[in-house]
Amino acid sequence: MQNNNGNGAVTRSKTALILTGGGARAAYQVGVLRALSELSPKGAPTPFPIICGTSAGSVNATVLAVDASNFRHAVRRLMTVWKNFHVGHVYRSDIFGVFRNSARWLFAGLAGGRGLSNKPISLLDNSPLAGLLRQYVDFPAIQRAIDSGYLTALSITCSGYTSGQSVTFYQGHPDLKNWQRARRIGIAMPIEIDHLLASSALPFIFPPMRIRREYFGDGSMRQIAPVSPALHLGADRLLVIGVGRQLQPNAERIKSGGFPTLANIAGHALNSIFLDGLEVDLERLQRINRTIELIPQEVRIQTNYPLHPVDFRVITPSEELEKIAAAFAHELPRTIGTLLASVGATRRSGSNLLSYLLFEKSFCRELIKLGYKDTMARKDDLLAFLGWPEHGT
Figure: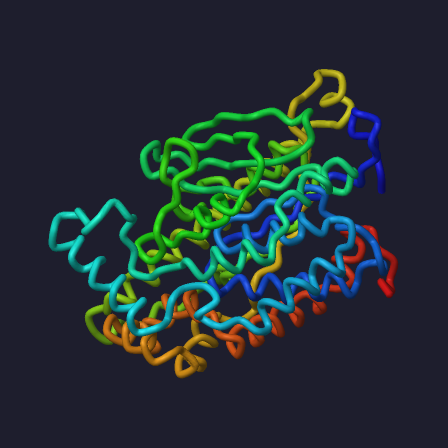
């Protein structure tokens, strides 16, 4: 399906891909994308002219945008990295690097938040991730994809520590406009490495990044409307890939076995940051769709009604990722394992935190397999939603 973008260039339908945050859990997204790439027509460009990423999802989103002219090739590049991931590719796992950062973090806490220098304080040093991104991501290619008509926009959402705003930085077609809503704004700006490092800076764990005049952290913090950037960028259909199992309507309440560990509390906080906002926003979107459908289409056209129904699909894990992480805790380097064990993260009760930090290929490959399986289980519906023929090959 194609249309004119208003500037003479031909683009495809306004289907947006939304990739949420979640540290190592984002390997699940790669499994979903692998299945979609196999279902897509061979050699076709990205079916998602609007790509929105947050936290670890921002890295996956950017790689897809860079290779927007060939969807399968972009997914293969993601697979190459995620299938061979090691903790040391994301944050320092050597003895000196781990304990130097941990000591500075502890000292800053005792000193009332004042560190030994002006360098941002964090539990872990994510400088290896910066090196990987510089080597692997051709940022100028984003604009080339936009100029060629393969991409309408790429957005990366970060959280401002001073303003308290959820800020979506986007690079896209010149017709797109900035927006401002309660506690969230959209700003046009070329996407660079600092945006990805800021968006994926897990609170306390990785250092914030300065972009212009403000320090930013993980984009999932204070992101009260995760689907909003895609709609502001012109999307009329959404495919959302989450990294947390959708809440069961009659979730079992289990009797507590004791006082929660630091890892248990931290994992609970991260789940709140990464998972809750998406569920609420999608529920809101469903209500809006139902309300709009009560208004006859001819009335909406005659009155120039500003809202329209937004068709969407959501793919989330069919299994609990923290339980999978617990089975692979032994894969961590000894330094990181010792550090996480000290706060209870290697116990089953603390595996939520572990699942966000376990950048090891065995765990990542398991999540990729799960994402692939969950997507193929919905093959017929997704083919119809994306308008693809039965056999992508």
